[in-house]
Amino acid sequence: MPVSSLLRPVLAAFLLAASVACAPGGEPAAAALAPDAPLPATVPKGTKLIVGDPSTKVALELSGELGTLPFDIEWANISGGPQTSEAFRAGALDVGAVAEIPAVYATWTGLPVKIVASKFRKDPLDHPTYELGIAPGVTVRTLADLRGKKIAYSPGQAQGALVLKVLKRAGLTKNDVTLVELPSTGDVYPNALASKQVDVAPIGGVNIRRYVAKFGRDGATTVRHGLRDDPSHLYVRTETLEDPAKAAAIRAYVAAWARASRWVYEHPEEWIDGYYVKDQGLSAADGRYLAELAGEPDIPADWSQAIARHQEVIDILAEETGNPVLKAEDLYDPRFQPVGADAIKDGA
Image 1 (tube, rainbow, N blue to C red):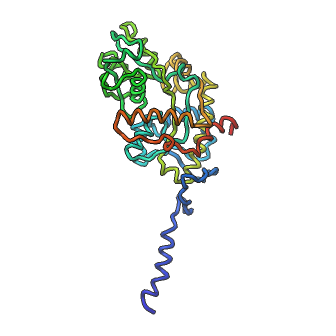
Image 2 (spheres, rainbow, N blue to C red; image 1 turned 60 degrees about the horizontal axis):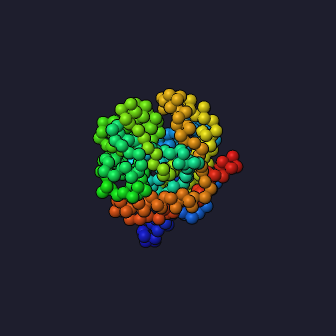
Image 3 (spheres, rainbow, N blue to C red; image 1 turned 135 degrees about the vertical axis):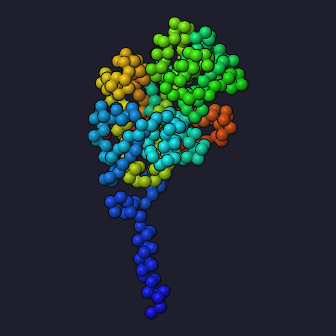
């Protein structure tokens, strides 16, 4: 018998074995999940997610939701768009928690992502995420007064997009002001205002309260911008959703995230003590201020209005940055649309 004939069965067996991918534990890996396939309801044993969502970690712990998750979870101390995108590119993160801008910039830079959960604030104009901090000695009472001012600007982050939206609302362009690129981390913006490095900066969270308390005697003020700035999203790499096990785990995480979000609102004192005081090291007074500022969460079962608002932001960003206009709906995975709202409604 020719040697080639002897080898043929062996070669065929080898190719067959090589063509069957195996998952951890020796089980055959499932085929890639199509983007329009229903989300799996069962999470396979041994599935793990790496999540960069520090505040939700505490919310899940305090609410008891963490113990109900049907998968292993590893927490990454990551927040904000730039850090999240960097971790996505390194394959070191499965789920990130951000506002509305990082998914846009990720897509523009060749990183395909999908939004899988969206949360907003009821009465958002009465519960803004940011206010415009005004430097001591600078007069800004209306948005029109921004003309000619030096404004802190952070491209690729929510604060940067807010500045562009505010200018548009005021009938101004970038040429009517001076944009000063600064990272919007920590207390960079309050310090830049106090030192007169900039005249105006969007400041959020406890910095709103602290900025006025610390520099108000010198003339520092804040002005509300009157725009919605409340989007909060969970997003993932598109390729992560091709893994049926991780897609199922992400579905379970979104449901727990929604229930924990509701728990935070309904248990303010426990949240203030457990998160703001013990985890973040803030005073109870600062914690109460932040809890009241956040107001009641809104997790809609229909994303259409949110997508329409997101499209308006994308159009502004595209015009100002020269990037192509994206379709906002393409950034969302509609399979996850009902997950959060159903979890709250059903308690399941």
